[in-house]
Amino acid sequence: MSIFVQKGDLTQIVCDAIVNPANSYGFMGGGVAGAIRRAGGSIIEKEAISKAPIPVGKAAVTTGGNLPCRYVVHAPTMEKPAMRINVENVRMATRAAFEIGVKHGIKTIAIPGMGTGVGGVPTKQAAEVMVKIAMEFENKFERIILIGRNDELFDAFKEYLEKK
Image 1 (spheres, rainbow, N blue to C red):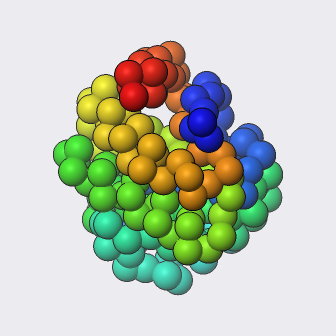
Image 2: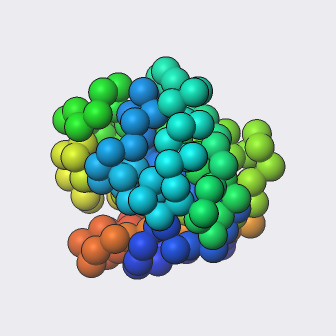
Image 3: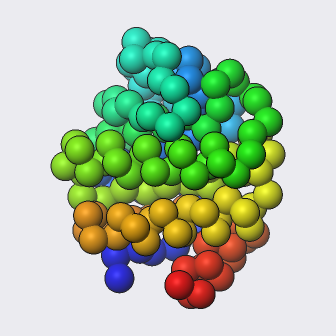
């Protein structure tokens, strides 16, 4: 199996690419996006904005800046910053992140709980959808890392992965 669950800080993961649950405009102010910008540098946000608008269901790849990964995959879960979303947005954004990863030859990718922060999607709903989609793509990556920033998300990823 090439899908792993890890607890911790997405911005510290050594891999080819990490996924930013972005907004369509590329602004990286809060949540996971803000953490990525603070750790990796404003060059990531500047490049993301230059590729905007990125519709929900599509994704764009930028530099990893000062992060220990080569790329950041920006997969919008919402059109505007801080929008409340539903699990369908999580499904579309997760699929878009993996699809563009395959297209760019990314071998190892780390993805956080999409939409579980400011988007307001319940953790278990997001985790179930994300694990299902990750399993569809597991043969296309050497390693897919599902990152839980807290026990709730980590446990939900593990629970759904063990069920599959």
